[in-house]
Image 1 (cartoon, rainbow, N blue to C red):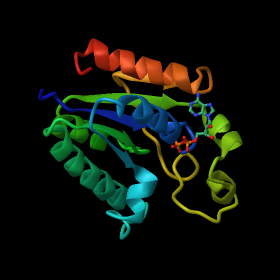
Image 2 (cartoon, helix red, strand yellow):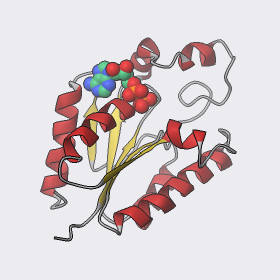
Image 3 (cartoon, rainbow, N blue to C red):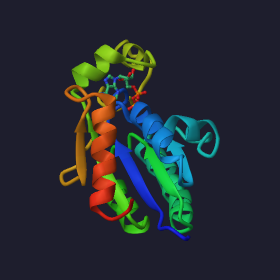
Image 4 (cartoon, protein in one colour):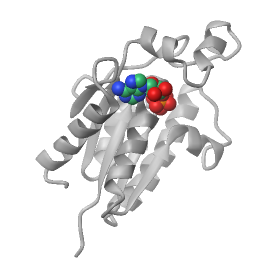
Length: 174
Ligand code: ADP
């Protein structure tokens, strides 16, 4: 049976929990669907390895992900995008291009992200060793009307994952 693809687009600060949530979602969904992950950090090692963190480069990085996601979704694949995607305009473009996209704001206060610092990047950014780090010396434009907000400083990973699955069901994608 052919099934419609859709996209779960996770946006939020570094350390907000995008990758963690994405891994759990994929574990759950891969049982009976084709699902692909588009993790920003991973894509920067391959498809976007020539790009940095200027606004133009971030937008180009996002544009490449949007292009690939669109191809997969229209062929019935579920695509889980985990990208900081700091600019509203880029996310609006994603929504125009990608069929059945659910924009999920993975929200945690900057202080929480700094405390977690899972990759040790905030420490470096605060010490000035990394420039153009989102939330420190580069902007993050919070979504104004996301389809869903998960608050990872208040919810468990399982709760956030469940909320996303419920939203996908409510929209008729699952
Ligand atoms: P991102 O992909 O957004 O940069 P990561 O998923 O790599 O973030 O890191 C998030 C960190 O926060 C992980 O160390 C994770 O274990 C922790 N964490 C604590 N509570 C939560 C939660 N409710 N949801 C997601 N991550 C959480």
